[in-house]
Amino acid sequence: MRRLVFLGPPGAGKGTQARALAAELGVPQVATGDMLREAVAAKTPLGLLAKRYMDSGALVPDEVVIGLIAARLAEPDARSGFILDGFPRTVPQAEGLERLLKDLGQSIDRVIVFDVGEGELLRRLTGRRVCPKCGAAFHLVFASPKADGRCDQCGSALIQREDDREETVRTRLAVYARETAPLLDHYRDRHLLSAVSGEGEIQAVRRAIRRAAGLPA
Ligand code: AP5
Ligand code: MG
Ligand code: ZN
Image (cartoon, rainbow, N blue to C red; front, side, top):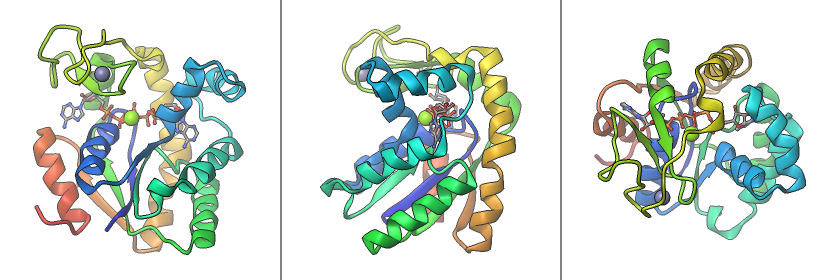
C-alpha cells in the first residue's frame, strides 16, 4: 500500500502522521496546504491568489489545486507512491484525482479518515506552532519542542499559522463539514475508506494507521 490519501478535519493530525509515514515508506508527503503556503511565502501569482482564500479559511478553487497535484504527481519521486495530505477535499477534486491517476496507470490503495472530536480539534489548532523553514508541527502542550519556541529538526523560530486563530478555525471546521465530509460516502462506496481514531497518543494513532493501510506494525 503505497498510494494513500489522508482525510480528516483541520487539526486531525494528517500532517503529523503523513510526514512520519512518508519518511518511513520512502514516498513523498504531498500536502496541498504546505504547497500553497510555500507559494504564498514566495509571493508567486498562485500564492497571491491562494492567500485570499486561505486567510479566511475557505478552500482554494478546485481547478487550481487539481493543477498543482497534476504537476506534483508527474514528478519522478511520486512514481512509486505518495501520501496525499489534505487533498482531495471536494468531490470534484476526487474526480480530478481519479482522472489523473488513470492517465498515469495508477490508483489509490486506501483512504484513511481521522476521527477527532471538535473540542480536541480546537485545542490542537489553537496550540499548534509550526516551523516556517522545514514544516514540522509542534503543540504547546501535546507535542512541545525540546527547546522553547525552536524547531527540533532545524532550530528555526516557530510561528503560529495565520489561519489558526480561533475564528478562522471555526470557519475551516464548517467548510470541512460542508465540502469535504461528502467524500466519506464517495470513498466508502468505492470500498476504499478506513476510519481510524485520531485521538490518543501520536504513536497509537500511528499504529492504527499502519493496520488500516495493511502495513506491518
Ligand atoms: P491544510 O494545511 O491542509 O490544513 P487543514 O486540512 O486545515 O489541516 P491542518 O494542517 O490544520 O491539520 P492536520 O490534520 O495536518 O493536523 P496536524 O498534524 O498539523 O490547508 C490549509 C488551507 O489551504 C485550507 O484552509 C485551504 O484554504 C487551502 N487548501 C489546502 N488544501 C486544499 C485543497 N485540496 N483544496 C482547496 N484548498 C486547499 O496537527 C495539528 C496539531 O495537533 C499540531 O499542533 C500537532 O502537534 C497536534 N497533534 C497531532 N496529532 C496529535 C495527537 N495524536 N494528540 C495530540 N496532539 C496532536
Ligand atoms: Mg496539515
Ligand atoms: Zn524546522
